[in-house]
Length: 201
Length: 215
Image (cartoon, rainbow over all chains, first blue to last red; front, side, top):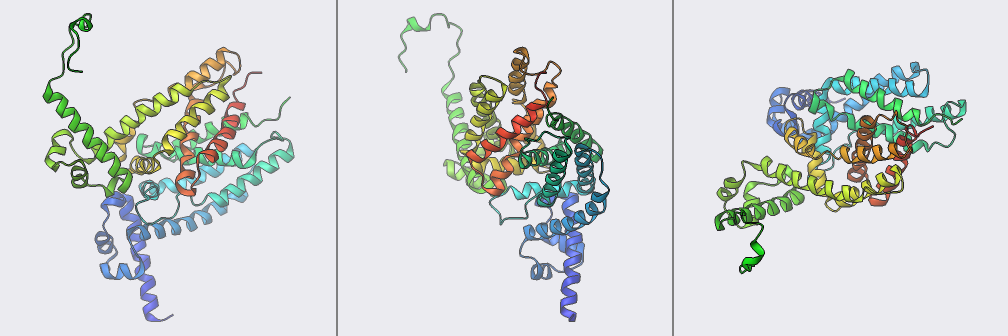
């Protein structure tokens, strides 16, 4: 790797780390590219050789985090056992634990994603597809084992669970909910959903 | 309008007719709100400025500040008014042969109403999720809790014996409302329209209510 390329990579890393911290501290709007550059110890100019905009920086910060999330979740997923409901509870507990470590960053990401007046950013809850497939698999196995009704619309149930998971994050800004609280709420909701999925008779 | 026969005023003897000044102030306010709504829809919350709003209303920024504290004050008014209208629309439609039908009708009306102005919804979502800006908007949105309407539908259903007496009405109302709202992410990020939202929520209502059925 040439010196120039190595430098570019190093700059990228520093900017992403600085941005991740700043977005988490003061939110997206208030964090300026200049402040990010200062924190990273690089010039504004060099930021713009690697990133096209502040939204682009946020995008890549979240992309990085997604990789870290897959790695973390990947370690725990093979260990998840028990009823389908309990496996789902464990999965969401891991997700909440991960994201609430930088909750302000996560919320900022959601807020920015809804802004159509900016260039499109990475979709929040972008991890959905992997976990969606995983839960669909678990539900299928649950039906095969006879723990769940045979007539479940699996994609609809998965989307319901993911929707509830996503929407519970509103408790973070409104009630200062932490991972434990979010998980507690989700556990209850999962209980209610799976009550309705039990086999008849 | 200006020449009401005296006869028609009997029985409302203590009505204080608004002064010309108050009426003018009210009209100005409405004009600013209309202009603001249109600009928030066009440029989003951050993109719209007081200057733009004033200009579109044909006024000075000073005139805007005479009626509203700041941009967030304006936005909160608009969101609050929008929420009131949504509440009325949903209340009117919350009718059906059973809980499932009533809820589907109610939420359908909600989706129709909200999708008519998707950019405004996105601006609302964006602001309400913002850690700093969000608190006031969230407060406004919670003033007319639609979960009360949902709870009424569920309670009637319990009384008719369709749902179990043990139904946790509060939990289920909140879940149904969250589910309804969460589907908007599909509208925003995947371009889902009314029929897709309706189909998805219909299935989700069935799943949620299945746990609450009697027997």
